[in-house]
Image (cartoon, rainbow, N blue to C red; front, side, top):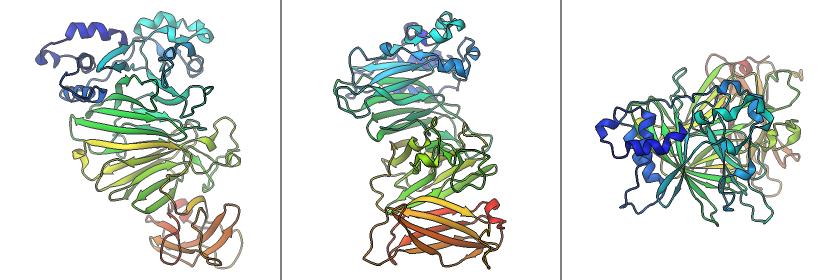
Length: 530
């Protein structure tokens, strides 16, 4: 399908709208994307063009991009790992530009092609599939060259020097798009972990989730001294189309500005904004480790939310099946799924390198108004399944059509967070110490670090609350030199496990907060204390 771009533009250029309406959706979009940019436009970037394409496409019935007419099923996972992109074919390499491109081969479950275009001086030029980009020497028995006429790219990578300026620094992977609207990025000293998505539709409605696709991309050619790269994408699904503009700025923390204009085909029950998808198998707070030799296995260990000057931290925890939390945060300042634990000894994995997985912080670049953070957790018995989703849900519903925010792929905390931070959460319902009065209680052992210093001999105070039916007792607080901070030991005595309950802990100086607010939804398995 990719190789049809030029011929289709010649066949259908200038055809009447009434004729266009009879075309398949994917064919119509090919026609539209080749239309010249209006000369009246002062902005020669790709965004205005893609908005025109998306708006026109939204008036047409949805048709999913056809699968490639090639047997990709014979390309197994192992085969796919041995199809190498030829480094000497990296796009823009010969021009020594600060950003370069690699393209993704079809195979496994990647069976729907995408359209790629470069964008320069207000014009789009197609990037067509070619076997010359790939080294098939390790899978020559598959004879993949013969399938070239029926193949298309299924994604792409952007390479950069990740903000490094030394002459000997090499280009390395910075961002990858492949599959639906999923993408992942890297900062310095990071390994791929959680994913972001362009849009989430009906994610919390079990069995009704819709996965929009980025079907086409326009990649603006960077200048020789560019610090950022701009590109655009066309979003398409049964419920909506959309035009997205990305601005990628690599560095120690790699940032992406994302702006999307939606053109709904129909009302959507739920629109998830800035969705993040991650994996939590087990951690220090888990009751079950499934016989795993690794102490912890997760891409993210907590949800962080900022509302003005207040910060909230909820450790991730496994669930027996399906759990959805709706956390109201009017006028949210930011949120993210974070990987705070950076100690290799806590993971002991020399292949996955979980201690180097990035956190992703979402920062609205416009007022999102009233809404809530949706945190969806699914049960898993494997580390190969993403089972955590977090996104913003606006109270405006379908009226919320313009999305503008910044993503930051980082290894540290947002700079604005100057309060104490939770670095470890442990929970137990076992009265293993045998002391009287401990039966029926839950204990939380929570470590805080980066707590602002207090006057000499002044200890912070710990506020403990329980939102639910039960009681708490005054917590114990201890200095913990091993985290350069404080440990709080809080006891909760639930009266019933039939209703949801949440415990919270915050350090204060008696008046002002010294830490973020830790919160923990108490699962039934923990509530049934021994």
